[in-house]
Image (cartoon, rainbow, N blue to C red; front, top):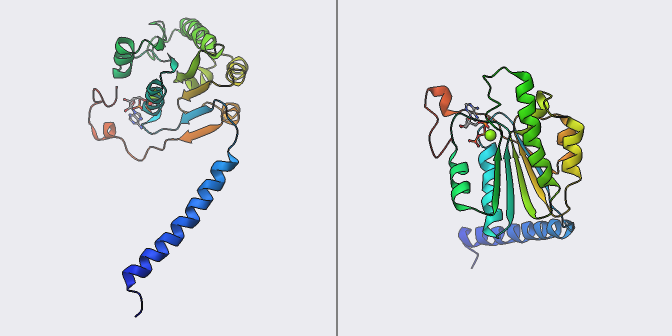
Length: 205
Ligand code: ATP
Ligand code: MG
């Protein structure tokens, strides 16, 4: 009696999965370097900062110490800031002071704010106690030339071997992309805001 189509499908599936598993196992075996990773989340779509905070949550799950530095001072408090400040003593959270907004048009004030915020970031990138450091919206500081690119890249490159760093923001330049181990571009296919839907508390901020 010949096999039914379902039985043949099952057997084909099993063979394909066996092949897939051996490919996955081989690539896992090849990745044998243990060290912190540098991740850049860029592009025009929504999801860069929220992905970074997803990794913060992962690190916290294992009880690691985390540093977060946000290089844009928004009008609005964000849910992540409220939560982390209130509930997560293992997270050190810094935000650029009120000196900087898109509206100040005060270039030297903005540069001073960027520099003093960068000092917080640099101290974290120097401290092996941090398992993960998030530099949210850092790319804009490089794009505006508010921070010296060489110094920023050197601090990221020279961080403790076990420390991972996540940089978010559009652009950032090719030198930054070259340095980072993982670079993901979030593409904007569409965004609710452009259909007139207001930014949503607990979703967008
Ligand atoms: P999120 O923090 O939601 O992950 P993001 O970090 O990718 O967003 P940012 O450029 O930092 O994006 O912008 C933050 C805010 O702007 C969020 O409220 C987000 O929903 C909104 N936003 C992000 N991308 C777009 C877009 N393409 N059009 C309109 N609004 C956007
Ligand atoms: Mg963002």
